[in-house]
Length: 268
Image (cartoon, rainbow, N blue to C red; front, side, top):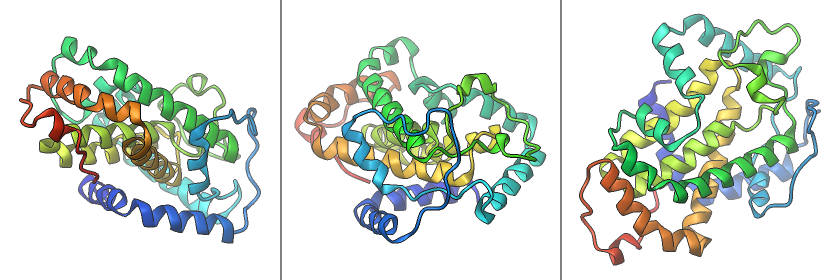
């Protein structure tokens, strides 16, 4: 599947989020859970309002399930096919930051000006990290390179991962939330940003540390958090117009709307 198709899939996900939430919740009730993988921090879930979103995620396949075997085969195929350019891009995407997300989307920005927008996005980063870690420690899925018999050679130091479980992808959760927020701030670059969301998640597969279903779950979790922020977080909504002006200035775009118009957010 190409990046264009992945981008179209994300736009469809964003538009259909309410029905997706209902469907996922019902599936979680109706489908029995397979045996989950062991992990050092399994069950260590902190108290957080974001934990409600974990209920939207399907339980991942077990280590010995056929679905996992098929996903591992896909990762081996990606490993065999990755080019030096793929490797460089995916390794750069190991960094979780607003700057790297925009740079990987080929969106130029003034670094000093973008730094001034940092506090708004730092709060979002903290939110995705908390939600992602709690979800990982709920499902406790084994990383693909740690499976018995795996021949994957991850591009990221395993020490960096600190024994964190695989599902969902934290990078993808972050990328989906940040990309969705940026798409509201920069509607001129919406398609470019949605493509980047898909690309950021796919980098985790190229690196060899996540299954496709980890990435898909990260998209669901990130989109759910974004929808909740726009709908229910009054502090976020109050800060959004000023943050929008900051980002638009940093990427060299004029603020074309009034503060009142900026406060009326278009949901993808």
